[in-house]
Image 1: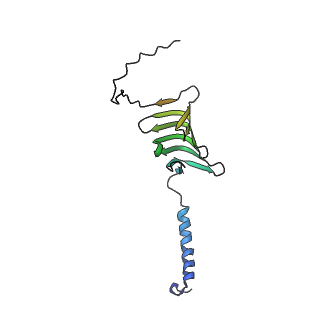
Image 2: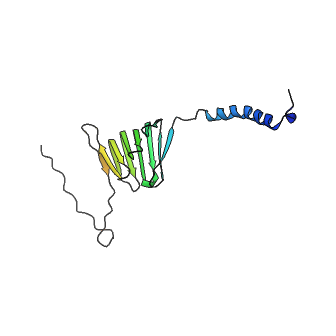
Image 3: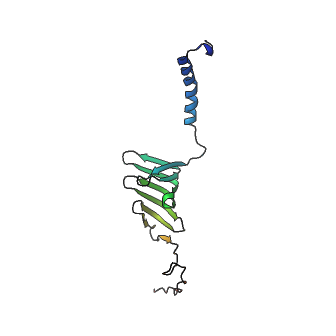
Length: 166
């Protein structure tokens, strides 16, 4: 064996590659300490990130659809949105996100929505929600009461109790 100080530069490089390559590969394929996958999509118009975290994610390069399953969490700071669901699909060509399974969406300011399925149309900023069978969609909107001058208005009159007709 030749001492390392007698090796040529090319031999030293090959020796370094032979030594460092396995270490780098081992680091690249090391198993993470948790099973959460993260995908970040850049929206073309504003180039702001949309982050989706989940237990499992798949990407179909042909259709450009990301499917996330299990403990899905979406964070979209530029739209001030957070969402959780059992599954989400991001259709990048259509610029749409379909959530399903116990969907909860929260907007900054306190507006929220609960449903079984929700489609979020990114360019329109519109949600289309569907409930589970024999249930309803629930939305909570924070309404700021103001008068014509922009000042806080007087409270609305109380609504009479709903009388059910059977």
